[in-house]
Length: 311
Image (cartoon, rainbow, N blue to C red; front, side):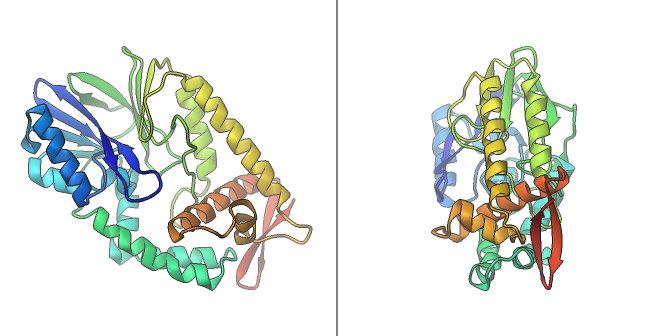
């Protein structure tokens, strides 16, 4: 199923397996009225009802995959499967008690973001909560668990990088990989550094790509775009993209050092929505800390701001 999104990606894929005991849904989309309408039409087309859903499986905690899970759980009584890491980060992002929006704004300020942009981050993140409530009661899944999709068991592969606790689901007999947002057919998955999360997400992402590239895969079912077959080719293209992005960001480090925000603006520009600036800044940081870990950059504190300097 292609479920509508109110931002540039436009669609997110949900997958429905029919088995002897009912339906399994992977990544049910945002919690909003267009998505509810899409699900009602889908159930009507299938000759089924939401009460026929027996399990809901989430590849990761991002709103376009996680958001509808609580509503569908309440309507069906089905368990919702997510990793412990994904559950915990979902709480950090979507529970007001954690004040993640304010933490994100402060984090970006310490990396040079101007107040004009930083002041918009908390309200922007806070307004996303309506797309993820009510929250599901999560049944944890972990590396190596068997999850039934229809009448076949898929193996859980924990593949972080795009999101903490992200998973792929793999059927080695049929060579099918439910990839979530780890590998997409046309676009590059966002890899972002967020406060309180994976300290080197690009390193995690590249390791996850290497892992799935070693599998025998006949068909990839991605979170966005059409299913595809050439996993090896797509992994190679994603690696090459990040190599070029790392080189570009390293080139933008001046002789006296440069803030992450200044690098971000040089690479992505400032003609962005708040949504796009949030991801552009977080992706810039993910690449810069990767370069720091590789010994190509180092970080210096100058007053209230961190500056990246060529090592």
